[in-house]
Image (cartoon, rainbow, N blue to C red; front, side, top):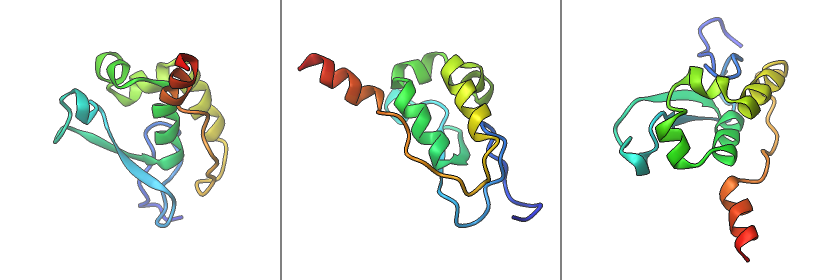
Length: 105
């Protein structure tokens, strides 16, 4: 870890080179965010966002790091994972889309 490593604006852990990471579109591409602002976050944080919220919810209500951190479930997750080492990565919960499609069957 280096003092110049970027910090995940969600879990507040450093993102050192080699750690799973991705860019999150603050407005989903499918909802008009293509070419819009992105934030660099841990892949684990990204997975949790998309497992918890729909694209419509992200576009409408959760389109800033502060709003994402204020979400009850995500806020608790970011606080929990923020206590782990920067390299920590685990599978996220089942995605919202998969849960909904199972209910329709």
